[in-house]
Image (cartoon, rainbow, N blue to C red; front, side, top):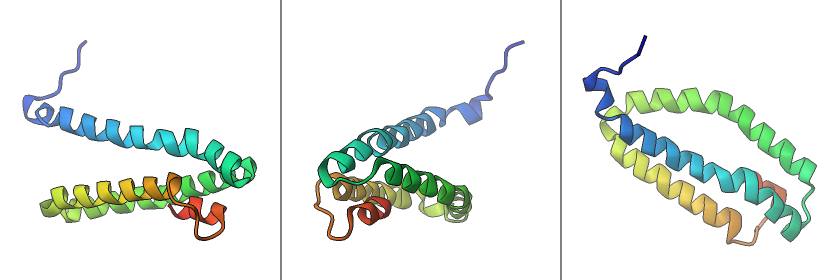
Length: 112
């Protein structure tokens, strides 16, 4: 038995897929490159970085449904909010890798 997606729902599927792919691509530097960078450059403990990343994932348990609700409520402004979030993510990536931490590196890692 083959499942099919109704035509009305599948028209925007590639857009959501591309959006999800971009978000996934942004996660790679955070989980793969940032820990090594912070260990090598600033001498932060890898175990501490792992604990911070685990804590941030726990925050996501609450944050993701809240952002989903907010996206539903502000559906009219989706384009503007996506552009603002993309700009915030780009600035955070620059802050994570290109800016010397103005505070303790572990806190800078957690905040950016």
